[in-house]
Length: 565
Ligand code: ACM
Ligand code: ZN
Image 1: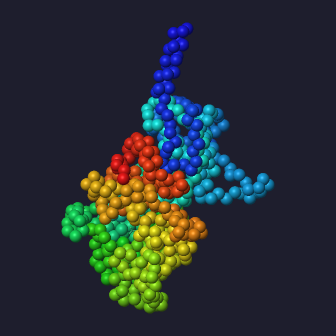
Image 2: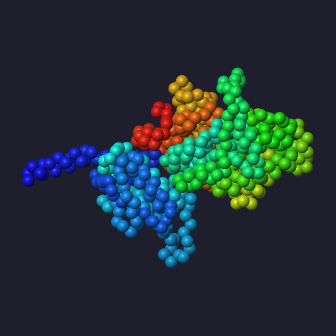
Image 3: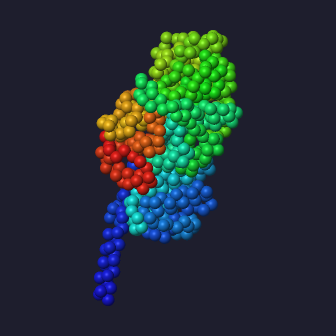
């Protein structure tokens, strides 16, 4: 009997040595984490995950959790009906009414829709949220807390996590115009975004160098506009080309597949058709839409092209409405991005059609200094040509409004004057965003020096693949970004800032591995700008939490930069 006792004790000791421990030191850090590390719940093979079987989203999220627990730990949990008493439970709860007698349905804020609580106690793990989006964010938190181990039980310290995001718009842009990325890779990109709590995928679908969105009314647009004859291989001044045709586009069915995949991860897809500049691939197919009549090649090199859509040709607006109409058919996003950046006006200044339109509309140049000029190679301030761009934006804004959508544009749309409901995406620093917020317009901050992840993350350029290298956007630089500076914005103006976005331009990023290397772990730094309150932020502490996330990157097959600056 004594011997048996010793064996049991030895077994218990061995088992507990085998058990791996979870840690809630995750990225992005939840709003509030109260841990009791003296007590544990042990998660073991065969335990159940209870969820509401009647709810399709809860069912899907329970399956995700089952899959992620297995991926991290090897443990096989069972899906069970909600009424069974299971150690892991996902529950949707009704928000508390204002007054006890109130019959009014409770309006949740956008942040509350993604909020959740995650409790671990002696009974197990209880996740509760008002909406499935909150359940999803909570299961990602649990996933990131798990040890990366195989086939052992896991000790979860008792905890009470209460979480909700700081900003409602937490985006990442992928430029699929300069280089084309497969739907399979885009799904992996979305998985990486979801892991970091991001909720807006800005899909840059058209560029001078390639048109990537199928438009059924214009079959040649994607077929011919997606292919450039060659690509530049040496720095722009030398202009050497590979002479290899390069192309690819997404059918509308593929776009819908991406929308669905993203929606299942509580990510909205914001499609961008960049106009009236960055349109040379469309001009290749429809040269009559350019001021000079062409011919125009799909651009084989990078930079800002002076060939843009003619602002005075009525066919331009017909074309744009057809394209944006099909875009709205495919993408349910409440916001549609119309680009608007880097549209040189040199052709418009000389074009009889553009000048006739300016005259017809009575647009006069004003000597007004505007925060947000006309862009690289373009005019500053409130010129007649910049006002003509605003006229086009106005027409498209009305069209999108008729489809129930709002317009987002790059900060150059300030130059000719903002249209009534335009949302400004501030990329040339924050000054455009601040100017827009002061005009009571909604803003997304994506200032290049903090948020452009096409730039290198390490000072020593020899350590990284070649990219746009005019400045470095290190993790610490990105992490230090604070979009709401009280000296610049009042509380009301600050409320106009919807959120923050990181942008991955791909002139020099041709392969999925390279795209992931540019993205990670910088998205981890960006995720705390997007999710956490400023008082929670501490770069050294973030760095200390990174190794746990990197183990999960490894398990998920995500490439990342292994050095942090
Ligand atoms: C931009 O980077 N041209 C928006
Ligand atoms: Zn013109």
